[in-house]
Image (cartoon, rainbow, N blue to C red):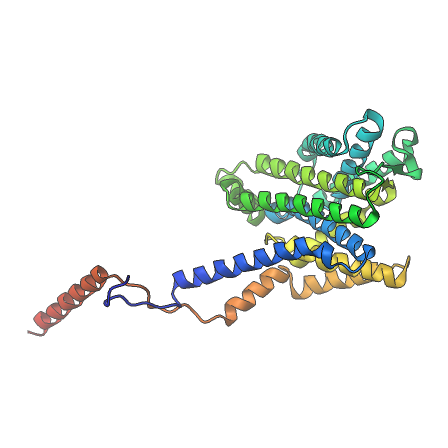
Length: 367
């Protein structure tokens, strides 16, 4: 219980931080509740399948954000790792008779191992050169997987058996894979959050702001970039493998498409690459928009026009993304923290003594 001599205000720094934390907790709980309830709220199987696609995009965008958000390196060829993850999962199941879920994990580890030499080669360049290298990789993989028909199925694609029995109906399949994608997304978000709060994350953000200065201050920039690059490739491969198990068919033209990497970048930029939930918000907006345009306009390229226009709006008016823009707006509208804070009786007594000493000094000066 506070004494009568304490001054209490609800607008101080401590009260403001508590309110922000409470708001974040409420928002997080609301998001979890919405994800859990979505399959039961979906009116039909098609809407539920759209939910799975959006959740898959959210995992891909969050996985990309390990590199883009922390280091500022923009990779347009991240479909390399999702495609490799999907094909590695399928080939382990079909050629080696591995359990589908074990195959997905092994595929993620295989792609992470492949990402080590790729990262060593590609992370030595920056800016536009890094973008070109990432695009070159996805184009090379597209040609390889299209040409190697005896092993990968070539242009005819590759059909993957469903991991669940045939007795499970399509809506149930969608529901299970929705929750599986949500679980993978939760793990990726937790990993991103942990890195963001670690010394490793501070080093990565220093690389993003000024890599040369970070290196001069002793940050092992290349090692940090390589580690986060491999982590990003691992989660991207898991997302590709899980999507392959759900969709049941792999086509190299789709799996190794530059557009998939561009969507990852757009989703992350739209939501905010420096925000934990930015890629998730961007995936919801972009994923829903793409599915809407595809349903309304069929096989036309209207969805590409819409995505291009959306990217232009983001770059011009919200370069940091929606979440940072809204955060800045709330901070401007919120009342400034008051200068009054909680004071204990001892602090009040100390202030009185200092004030009395100051008054005595003034009197002596006047004398």
